[in-house]
Length: 207
Image (cartoon, rainbow, N blue to C red; front, side, top):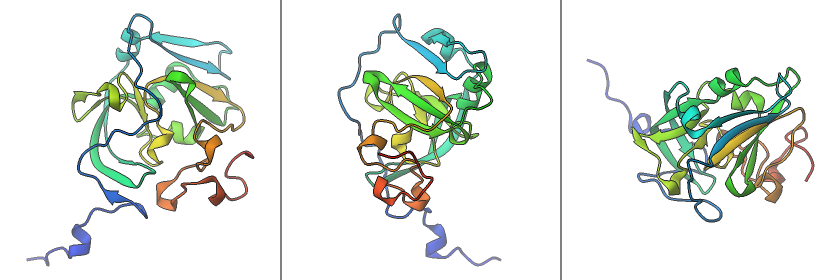
């Protein structure tokens, strides 16, 4: 009979500086937008392979292949929520339907009120990056990003905005909303990349 796991082995592994969160706090900047399905569209623009813009209505976007991803969410405010089930459309699925040009290196994710967050293309195309419509089998609430929020499990949660409306393919990096206001350009929680003063050469464009 094997030895029982040590107390340390039974504890969930958290990035440095994070604490385990049992619930799901509401955190965002600005008001909660009103969802108008007849006016909602998801756009892919910028340096697309076909040099044009791709758009989906809400019905068209939610008709794309649905996938579930079990992943953690790490907020820069120092709470972590583990093993949530996110359901929605993989970022890879969007990129396959509306591919980037060959020289694209980064993506800007655009949300309501002009909010934005930049990602390396490799982070966007990660197998667990998902445009979520559901959490644990239930539709997201408006406060948590309904009708669409991006989940990038291996980065801090601000890299995945709520109320997403589209993506822009970019051939050079450009800082998003919080990155322009002092947050780290990459946002890796395991390296505790919280703030821009921690950046090293090559981590991002100048402020």
